Amino acid sequence: MRRLPLPLLLLLPLVGTGCAAVLGVGAGVVISQDMLDSNTFVAQLDEDVDVAWAMAKASLGKQSEIPIRVDDDVRGAIATIDGAEVTVSVEAYDLNRCRLIVSARKYGISNGEIADLVFKRILANFEE
Image (tube, rainbow, N blue to C red; front, side, top):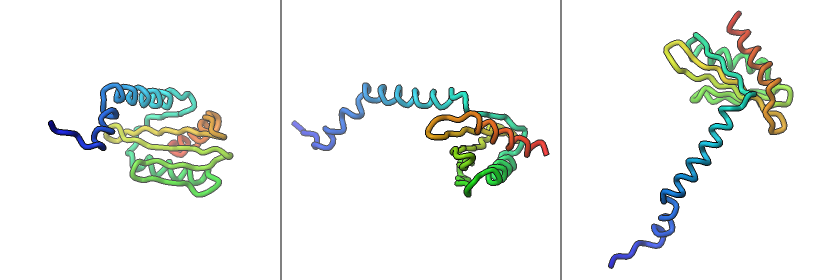
């Protein structure tokens, strides 16, 4: 009779179907809560994603109290505006079309007022 090594036996319960289902349900709840947040503002723009990303970064940089943190690989930026942490991202979803997403958190709670203000300021730059 062949015996399984101890580390393999300890990992066996983690790959069981019951654990996988529980992990999937937990992840689904987190994703749903983020997508259903009414304080997140989304605009679909008829603009090239690189142009929109450059404009969003420039606008966010002007509004921020301190230098913004930028991740160009995922087209995301975080800024501090009126004491809130504002997150802006730009996603490509079609040729010359993209999605602008803005959310804000102050004291760990979603802040729709600041997110809406930043969102409107960024969109105003596209109209100029």
